[in-house]
Amino acid sequence: MPVPYLGNPVRCEAVLRSFDFSFRKRFGQNFLIDEDVLEGIVEASGVTGDDVVLEIGPGIGSLTQYLASTARKVVAVEIDKSLMPILEHTLDGWDNVRVLNQDILKTDIAAIAEEENGGKPLKVIANLPYYITTPIIMKLFESGCPIDSVTVMVQKEVADRIKSEPGSKEYGAISLAVQYYAKASAAIEVGPESFVPPPKVSSTVLHLERYPETRVKVDDEEQMFKIIRGVFNQRRKTLVNAVANFEGLAFSKDDIRRALSEMGLPETARGETFSLEQFAELSNRLK
Image (cartoon, rainbow, N blue to C red; front, top):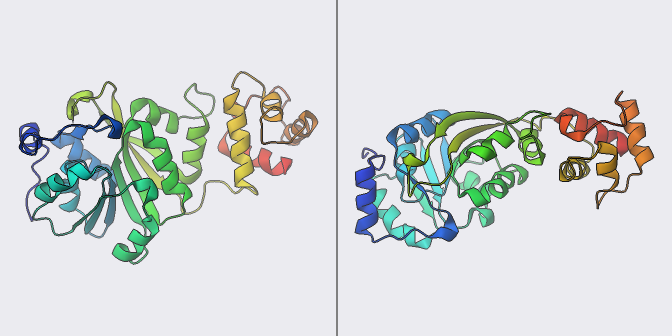
């Protein structure tokens, strides 16, 4: 099996020049050119020779080379058709890689797990365009596809929000949505100099270890997340006012006050201090 070489900036840029590649802004392309970061992502993901990896956004194959040298199989999903010839070149010699020219939001991940891993969970690793980070992370968890973990490069600000705790200024609906499905931990901080072209922000490699079951049990998952959105769409209001005024929910202020009282909480409580467990209890009591 070949030795990964795209962690070297000179070799990476030589490949881009040889294919006369032009970065496409609409795909938010920033390719990793830092060997230490690439090795760190593989280590943080916990990938072993027994694993099948779903890589989202392989770019020119920098991380793919490192993954293929560690995992049993890598299925890389890349939306940009112009990168297909480059990937064919940079992944030549790694016979355990399958590249799909598809949009991950339209890809049947369960089918990939079935075909490549006998239906057993995949490890997902991604260097995502920042503008689409949240939709992709949520699709991975909400779809119910067999996924063991997600290791993803995200904007540092997004990582801070995802792993934040109740009461912090970063805490919000995305924190609760991700933490409902997985335990989030920051693995590596990555500066702009580790990419070509360098982004304008710092990044964080975030490891999301999926819970065997969701973190809390709730009678009506959709209702709970509507309550959460209502709270964080109107952060300056008390929970009673935020939930009572949120379109899509039909609870009176008295309903909400009664539920809070049953939880031993005052009617002046603010939702940004609520844990996921408290939101689940509130939703169950309101239902």
